Image (cartoon, rainbow, N blue to C red; front, side, top):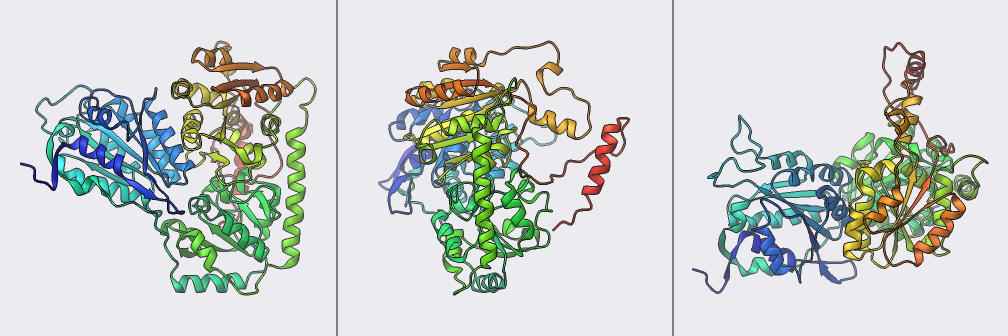
Length: 616
């Protein structure tokens, strides 16, 4: 019997009502719904229990239907990223393939440290109808289900086997997602019978305190050691990672770098931390980096890594700054302690505000050289992105990027470009210009083909008043394109630019550079010739689409796309062979020790020479 302090609810109803009521306090004091909605494909295991609860609350907690479970999760993750991890979306699926379709996206969120709440259905806790449709049986463990595959991919996992367990499990899941050090995906597996079980739910559970994002302050000893190290440096360089954006530290970093004359390079996740034309922004770092950034980091006597996990693309497989001392500022101790760094475990904005080394500045010659290299690189970017393709050749990514970027005078501040895999991340990292944090949205921690269109949809949900431009290769488009239809269903306009190089051009080049025989990448090498009409396919999903013949037509099509009100798809043929040669650094790709091909043996010799490079 319920009393006045409780209400009789099913577990699913309690979960949904708590999510609908949960608010988060933003930096400006505003209170917003923490969960902006639930992506749902109903099926066996979630339609009767959680589905009924969502239907009753959908005015408070929107329910959005996608066409692919992995894509729904990508959209939810992109929403969280576009909100700088301040807000989330949830995803619910059936108990079988619907749940396991989430695994790739879950790994993506884990690698990128991005929050998403996963609510897959599960088998009966009672086991009365065991085994049920879609149930995965383990011969050695009776309590195992397909959802146990989430365990190594999430920051927190729980299986709710009694309805009252939601009172503890959901707050723990929320705590993990709002802790900057543990932020990532969480999974609450929901057995379908437990979803429907009623219990006396405390009213206090349904009226929660607002959440907030913690800003850990630095340990006094770590801050003192960092200040001392900084003051001894003459040629420092900052590597800005995604933590700068998630901390809201972009303006602080800009002021700090200017005050002390310190050049700043950006990782994929950190691009946009400084405006592209900031005098001390020397561009992208690492394998896909600019010549300015890579030249400076090789000469720096101190590298200050702010909010980056120092992935191998950023560090040239740990060879790019082997001689420099490393100061790492990160909320996550594991990341802060990488590469023999002096670690400051704290929030980026707090540390940069506190790291005030008196009148210290970098050497004036170093600051001046950094600014000169930045100017040269910006001029080179302008040349690369405005040049016409050689006569008789197809354009390559840089020329397409230029046409897309220059189709609006306001593009620097209003556009958000979205990408993920293939050649485009390297080209966009070097060549895209953004003036504001969030104007560059690249999933390159997991480099997941198929993220692009679904991710663009999540970004548009987060930033409905900005133009969201998805740039995607034909390979990724073919892997996952169904959320074009979802964008139309939800009335969320995207501009999707498909670069068709007729296969996996990026891996084709890597294959040949490794000495291997050309095969299995470009469509012409994979069997019978296949001509895919991407514009016709997009039109069949409801988009307005066009296949343009060249860069000039692309510019015109982009102008029309900006004026349109529904999703636009623009297809352009590009070459798989040309790329931007400027910049870049070594990246370790293992080459076979034994091969009959002389090209492989030659590549192995080069590889063994490269292995002699000093590493951190």
